[in-house]
Length: 341
Image (cartoon, rainbow, N blue to C red; front, top):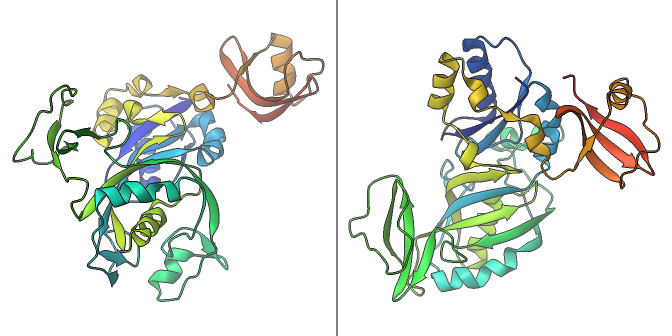
């Protein structure tokens, strides 16, 4: 059991609880003890893709922390909370409600390299203490701004997202919950997927109480800060009411399973059915095939010389069995992280 189990984390569950759930599933399924870790924190108020590393895959968890992420999030306008999400208390209000046209116009300001101030309620450390612990204790928390990259930022009506521009207004998808009272079917549009309905969305110049956006971001980006800053740029205030991670590194919702499914597979001793190979986390790194002698040398920590490969990182393997993550420089191959398989 060396690889990745991707959870569709439910609301209210912390990342460490997700790790505990997988440990419990391994135990209940009779798999024995394995190291288990997560590949990127997801707040309890967020849902979606939570990669769980099992066995030797835990050696790659750090790389997952550095990977890009994609989020869907909803910003409610008119109220800013101390936590910048629905869990906090109101600290600022505004009667201003932006239009969809205004939202579309401002998104370019937050695309590309930007600087943002993390939320006071975050896991960052200040003088050795977690920022959220200090904030909850009533201390004033001032965090330094950080540089992040927003690779793309779109509204539901841009570029084939959850909504499409149709004659006379916007059409958007509603996933889950109660079906809309007045569903519409726009001519020429794709049919809704299972569990989805179509409903009218606001016209471009109708004031919005909230808007849902999709962001593809670099490591270290705080969506709650992004939502705060977008609202301010629109002349109002806001906070996040929904946050769902749809992709983390190479992992997306297509491979994610619920906790109920995890428990079901554990009881059937069938977790192998959803265990993704260790290699999947390194899909952006080319493979380097080894001979048995070369694999043995790398497993002993020795350097391979005279290898005909371009400089850079490789996933070294012997007959499809992972041996090591390696670095090639001037024909020399050095182990970055070895796998005991």
